[in-house]
Amino acid sequence: LPSAISMRSSFAVCRLVPAVLLGLGLFAGVASAQAPGAFARFGMGARATVFGPQAADVFGDASPYHNPALAPFLSAQGLEVSGALLDFDREWAAVQVTAPLQPRAGIAGGFVRSAVTGIDGRDESGYSTGELTTSELAFFVAFGTRFTENISGGIGLRIYRSDLADEIRPPTALGLGAGVAVRATDRLALGLVAEDLFAQYNWNASPVGGGTVSDRFPTRLRGGAAYLFGPEAGAGRL
Image 1 (spheres, rainbow, N blue to C red):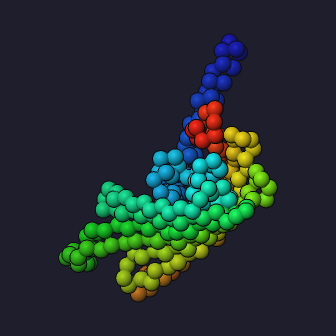
Image 2: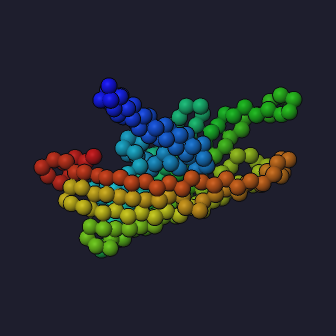
Image 3: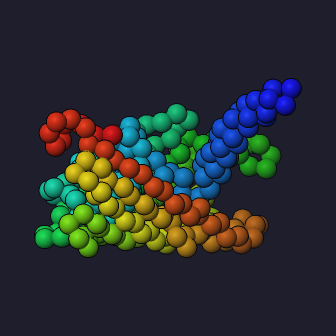
């Protein structure tokens, strides 16, 4: 009987731990999606949509937008333009310019824009006032340098702007980021980055009868690993 109770307890713990971790992950995702700057967390370009924001891929020109420490590993100058038409009349676009700075550094810059169009405007009596449009914009610059052949660090700067209504002055926010990348072996790399430090919107809705409020961006700490597959360099990445 004690053995059976012990087995049941272990089984309950094994079921409880994944459930708690899954709940925390879902809660964090919802909270992050509802917080300001969510449009900028989609990532940079189509590659980030497929692979996710990469914090450690030093092997294949991953965007320094995701980790400034990846900038020194850029192989050549580049221009990336991405756009998407999403459900519910949403638009999203991103532009990035990258360049290596010999012998040990790299830099990237660009912007991300999101908009919602076709919003049905109504007055207090319910009469139509026409269609409304909202938009958000983020400019960024990222710089990184190698401390050694296999260790790099970088800093990033993002400037956010949000346009919600013509009567309200669009607020701006300044966010800082910092990251590190380590090429542990010829095939394995690790990365760590902190994003949107000190960023917040300060809203003033007094022109439309509201008040003032501060809307802080979530500070995110992300880590990752990248592994190079295949018998030769560049054969495949994870």
